[in-house]
Length: 89
Image (cartoon, rainbow, N blue to C red):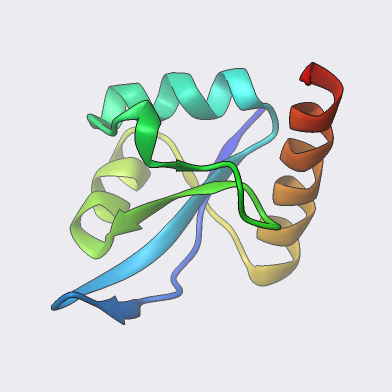
């Protein structure tokens, strides 16, 4: 199991934003909590479930063991997360 963070750097509200995903919802939420993210910030209604993280939070995630994820990896993980959400509902 692993947690991944991309290097998207999308500008929004004066900050640069990246995406955080994982192999499982449980692992993603546990890691997000360690980062200090609120569960309410989980983007579960998007086509690709994820947490948005600032560039600074990206560096913290990497220091806590997240792996750098390329676009292919991020999309594959998000699709698995979407499947897990659908199974749980």
